[in-house]
Length: 502
Image (tube, rainbow, N blue to C red; front, side):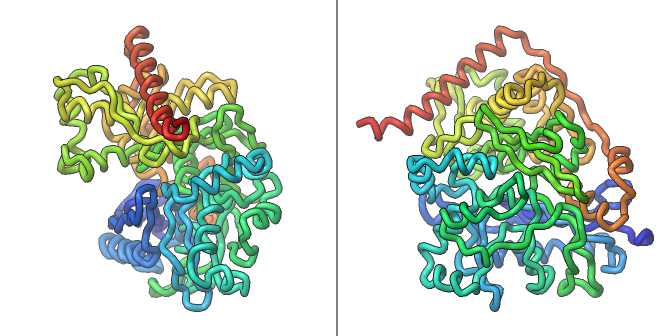
């Protein structure tokens, strides 16, 4: 194994599929990316075509290997990281999906979640899964497919259907249908998995009416699951698997209890390593499995922000005030402040720490003097404000004063956003020297399982800090900005609540 040159990391995200080859020094040597279709059948519904996800992923695998001139024999292992919670149900015999993938952002089951909460299931679900009841997670999405796709429930009862999050879907296709597996980190996001005994929970399966025969086998995050064959001239071990945020935590080398990272992707996701025991949140954060390596389990606290970088995509595709996402920093820099404009991007409700499924996005504080530049600046700033809300909740839960935040993801390259983030948090923001930390995490897990890297000590030596951002804003200005943000969030929540009061 020591002669192998690369680890192949598959980073299947919400808007694109990527493949990246990593070398022994932990650096990416080649990458390929392909966007795929976002499907919005109704307001609040978000779907993907699972076959398009697989074809785009297969395509970038071929591209990255050609770009690097790499042969299958040079690849030591494959690691998979993925958009979490997104739900695929397929026929075991044909391998074809019975419905589009229902994406983590989808809100169609919000009413069912309300009923579950009203019926008194919140405490049991929280105790066993570490999650709040929300349409975000996979369980209600599976139930919706079984209840709404003709013949699906009957086929599931006959054992003909398989469920998986995207990691499972990729492993199934890579292996020609021989592997139906997931890892503990992805399983912990389904609202069906007991994070204490690390098993599928029969009571929850009964509550949602989901046959156990649909479920993948749960494995650790770093082991050889099987072999990828069809796309390659020789078989390659599939040996690492973790949900995207857990992979980023690992890729940032947040291996010690109390270390924190934030990923600025389509959403924003802050995670704190809480060690070998689950920490119950009193501030509406999620308790989740970070990873399992060997016999060691690591847990995390997580704050999930549904709309992060996606707000910039909306400025481009919905509002049309920028032509490409990278234009937002230049547009926002035309003004020195948002001048009282606040943007609450609750396009898919509000995540942590509010967990309001019915909140909707608002822009407030508009005047005749408001320009596109003010709106662009408010859009950037809302990403930092949402991160502040989560960090404050995390500090309360952990009792720690967080003084360093490791950051990664697409929006983390924006220097003005990262400086504003440091100012709001009154903490150092440290951007990773390797931008591809999520893909790196999956590569590291696969490399550990196959002996490509000797252990975590070697991996720690590979991690490099990029730029540091230190806080410099005056306290009165900071406090005024935060008061304005809190007023805007309360307005978004009130707007959603009002129809029910009339």
